[in-house]
Image (tube, rainbow, N blue to C red; front, side, top):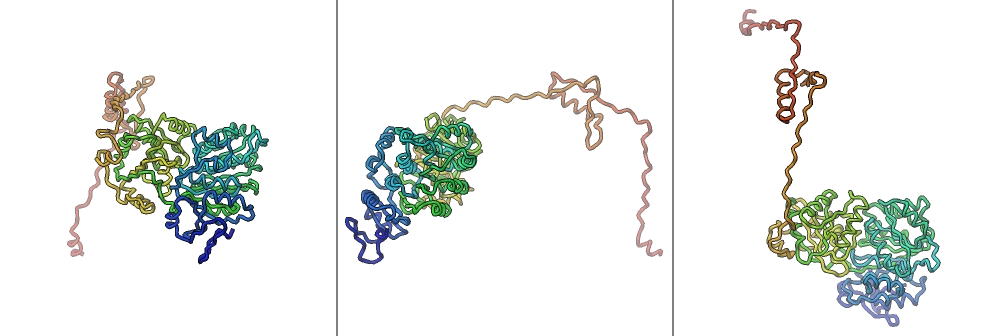
Length: 568
């Protein structure tokens, strides 16, 4: 729709009932209209509209007349007037189901996406992690699928593809809550579980499927999963699927879906391959961003600290940090699976309620740890980056980077576990001397004020002051148990069988005799004096022939070489 593009020179377009705003850069736009939706292309303003104006335009124009393939909507996260879901055209049944779990108002990304998604248009939703992307696509999805009471066929009508098992479980639970009133059947399909329960659930009939690419593709290729009636497709955390190498599997899944479908793609970042995927499989999508133009920013409600620490002092510092005032659930991120398990074990030994989640654990163990973390049985979860995307738990007040992240993207995803949905949080990063160069690169890209982290130890005064740790706190919340003495295993000696001498040991091919055998017997007796049996000393038989004593070779006396030549 060409009317959405301002001319580059006066007079500016001024249709009926539309505001007339000149092209300005994004900074001025945020200053002039801090509570509007913004549509921008680079730094050129395309249009600034209110939510009501957008809905009016959408309702009064046919799909053919809406040429918004290049349209981008941008709204800052400081949008204060979060509307009710009932005011955004959501079904009353869905509104009631959300109110039952304490959700009634929409966040920025939800307010942007709901009018577009409910109308059936393709869209790309881009926002930081923790801003409510799941309900941004989940509510329109639940509203548009048919329930069993509406005559649903039992075949999947909507498919949500996610990169990790933890995220699959989380999204499935959120959709279950949103569709509880209408009894929408939601099934989670992911690896690490037996096939049989998932196959049985598919045979009984489902309305929405949430799954990981590998297991989805496996069941689809076997003909067990029928995707010919899918009318809504959601690709969640598309950039993470790119990082994990799942995009080829996703493309194979997309080829089995009907061409006439609605596709929604949600991602925190938009790398090139993800953009290419969107162009190939989406129909003129609208790009929605609920953040500032600079995506490399952390959530403003998170207070950050960075300390230069010694590797041997990290656990001690972490143990003191976990005793900070007003600390709730805490997530600790490690670089390796072994380090995560070791840190979790040491914290548990010191008296903290800690659990671990990493790739070496089976799926059952990982789910048990997450269940304990959500229920509050443990308040410290030590994890590798496999959990940085998939865990959405309320009440996470502290995030600790036990090891420096690999890049700024990983840092944002880790820190995004706290400060979710506008809550306050604390993020602490431990920087070892070997990690200083990597941290300085992250600090520069994210424009953080920690280019040279202060050298800190577990007894440093500023550590207690910064994090609100009570004075006198130690690294133990219970008295360490004294080490038990180790049992000394006594050597067992054996008596010779049938009176036969023990085997002669060889040293460089020669039998050990005499003093060597006696010394061996003596060592065994010392190891167990109470039960030692004196081994018989073996003496070889004398040789039948006398030993040969050859006459030494007579060497000629040295000759004076000068005298020899003079004689010649």
